[in-house]
Length: 135
Image 1 (spheres, one colour):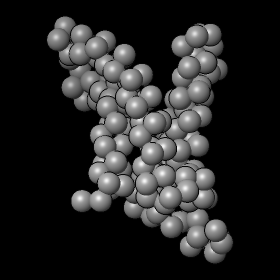
Image 2: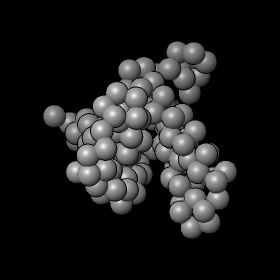
Image 3: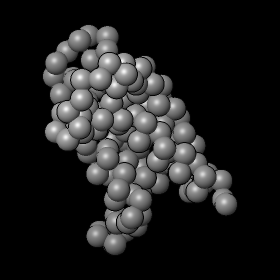
């Protein structure tokens, strides 16, 4: 397996871990509906893991792009995804330090944009070239 592919799949795992607090909470709210203390404690445990996974994702994704393309700043679906991930992380940091509700809302919106771009990158890597015919 090529290093870039391995780094890509590690990034997938980090995306799942980083987004787990949100989708597990939604899954519990709409489907499972448990008040089990073990589950709620697991959600609390995921809060710092969420931050660590986001930081690791930012570093690993940049390295993945460098290994895969040799130049991580070439316009590509991965470049757009990384920009969205970076903005998501920046808004999360602003919220963490300033407790600004607008930053938190922006963090959640950008997380959704990042996940959509993640799937575009995963299944249609050459979307920019095919849609615009350039780059």
